[in-house]
Image (cartoon, rainbow, N blue to C red; front, side):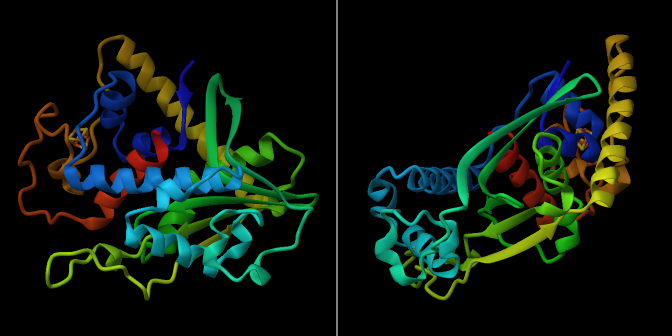
Length: 291
Ligand code: SF4
């Protein structure tokens, strides 16, 4: 039995051989310094949001970083309903804007697990807001909102997170939704004339909400079944010494893959451009999927 996450399902879709390297052989590429900085920012933001939901002090996480403070303040001003009314960050917002909804239950870093076709699945919601007839899954994203929302709608994270909640609760699919909050403006990182970080005072956090439905639930079920059937075949071959399939070189993924040397694909497609969307996908996998 494998313990799988949405990130591993995404890897499997992206390139089965990459799944082999990362999941089966436990190989990992060192992130670049830029990726490390981005991951540290995201970790800090997630920790702050978790601590404020738990009523714990957050001042030490806010101090000394103006851009980070601005990002938190902007989110709290834009979406005060996401913050606990007793939050110590309330200095940032007019308390009259804070929600008066005691029936809403909040749970941060909320874990759900289920088994499917002999494999174990786990998801961790950054924040889960539940009411008797409604449940909202909230996820913090620390990269810019993608231009193409469909990409995110079809992403395994959106589908598996909603699927998991329906499978492990009494909520019907229509009572479940998932919302991504893009909390970090790109210009927060822009450098001023002296090389100092700009505070990004004009950044407005943005969100994308994806409702769920019975039809989507059935579609995810089928997609999951098909993915696991393929995986079973590949695992069976792998046990016989046959590696998992490589992605077609024409897709241009290998040039920016850390396993290109291992795969004999280094320089396989030198004309391809470095696509920021793919970099973002990889970052998302590292940041959000394999904590
Ligand atoms: S180099 Fe290409 S084939 Fe090999 S793991 Fe990376 S994307 Fe897959």
